[in-house]
Amino acid sequence: MKLGKTAWNLAWWAVAIALAVAGYTIFFVAPRELTMGSIQRIFYFHASTGISAYLCFFLSFLASIGYLASRQPRWDWMAVSTAEVGLAFDTVVLITGPIWAKPVWGTWWVWDARLTLAFIVELLYIAYLLLRRLSTEIDRRALISAVFGIFAFLDVPLAYFSVRWWRTEHPGPVIAGGPNNGLDPRMWHVFAFTWLALLALMILMIRDRYRLEAMRQKVNDWKAEEELGLDVAEGKEVTQ
Amino acid sequence: MRNFWSILGAYLAAWAIFFVYSATVGRRLTRLEEEFRRLKDRAGRQG
Image (cartoon, rainbow over the protein chains, first blue to last red):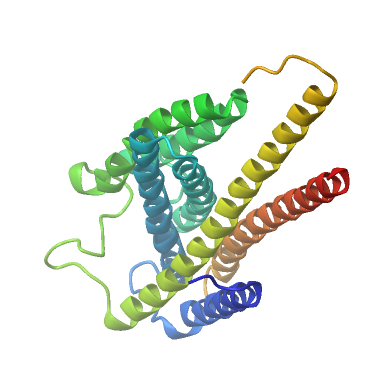
């Protein structure tokens, strides 16, 4: 089933409203955390954005494997779309984290396992996007990107599980963190709602980015056809 | 509310990044759609 332009515009509006409602619940519905105080409210969009970013990178990893297995360009489009959207989400994580850390830790940043690995994830996906700009030959670019995309993803589980495996300044998981851990039900509701709104935003952003890649391919195909036509008309030898 | 400006700053920074990124993608997409339409029209005229 194909949704029309109006339906997608409505989806964008629905997500914008959901995000505004999420903002209201973060500031006015979620209870004040006892140890950290109000600054803990950053958690609702810091953590949900982080999980969404890593989900994007996981999708990029799957799409890269899909490309290597099938050599279908649409897998490459999906890989780059999810990697780029993931990078946008991850940037939000790396900006909101230090704003939260400063009043709680007394410093913006520490080079503990979680923060260092998260920073490396960001650098790897920036490198992934830069690498794509180096090659203009489409198949070669897709192949190199797929291999690098799989390699880059290896850091994501390390970053995600670092708070369980090593002692870090960054707090341990509050969701699925084991016994004597977890969120107050009201906090959980606010977190779940914010995360769902961000997931919806993520889907819309990936969809637009994927359309951009598909359209770029279409334009390139038309240009190639046009050039081929001109070459034939001018009597040049055409080699494929 | 203590640290209100920090929380608001983080919140606004997040939405600013999402907005700027989405706007950039939208602009790039519009430009490509226009180019595609132009190429299609030109091919149509040339028969």
